[in-house]
Length: 102
Image 1 (cartoon, helix red, strand yellow):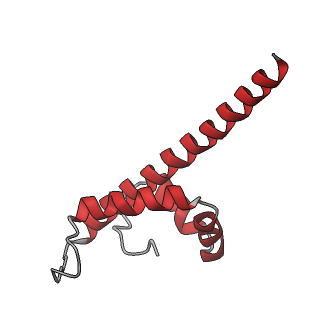
Image 2: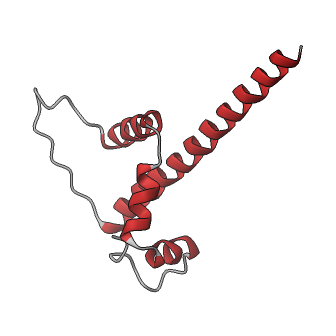
């Protein structure tokens, strides 16, 4: 999956991702909530400028570097959203506990 980038690039995250099995990456992807998936999909569509397919036939081409940048952006968005989702759940749990104790 991540083998098409310049091997001379010193990127520890990319090296780590290359060491992971496809099963591990798939398990992580499955663990993301539908809400996070929807936001990421919308973000990628916005980056690509997707037009309604019933009215347009869209074809996109790019080079590896730009595609890698977009993938990195989607990954960071996913990480950020996952962290915010965890924080939201923790906030709600703490609020429920505080309300229960009052």
